[in-house]
Image 1 (cartoon, rainbow, N blue to C red):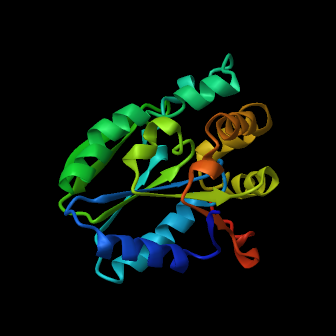
Image 2: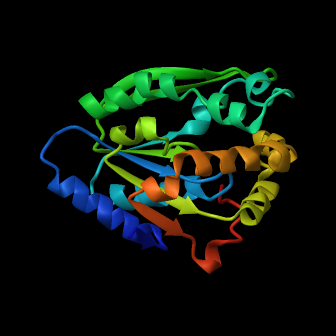
Length: 220
């Protein structure tokens, strides 16, 4: 039976206890995953803020920083399975960022997002970290589970996810592409992930959003 949470403070308490009880100086890797638009980013930021208030060094990793080029992600020939397989540069992210943080607790690296209109570079310069919070879709694949010290699946239905993305389109251009392709590509890719990887079954806990947070336009 999975542990079910409905606020960030509960997850913070579990992660604080894991940190306190660990027998190694290595950083702990926590995956917070769910479908596109589930509310992963805001939840992760709340957890990180609460942990930092207790003196725990936290690094947040957004898988959006490691997405492939738009021409690869949104290729008109893409099937949902191909989007699932190729939308994110997970191998590069793990090799360049996650493993150094897990083994040594520090890293200096960067990644370039090859967007056609405006290429951008995201730099990670972490001197010390106790907990790494990775948030994003498709994290709970079987191949990656051994990498994590703790996992949480953010439960959301596709109608709620679509609503969140629609409220983000005026802020985030990438959300417009996701919204445009939601029914034909994004939703089926998420369903493929759930069918293939059983993320709810493989997670340590499930987060179910409280009713009063469901209409938060900042939740992604």
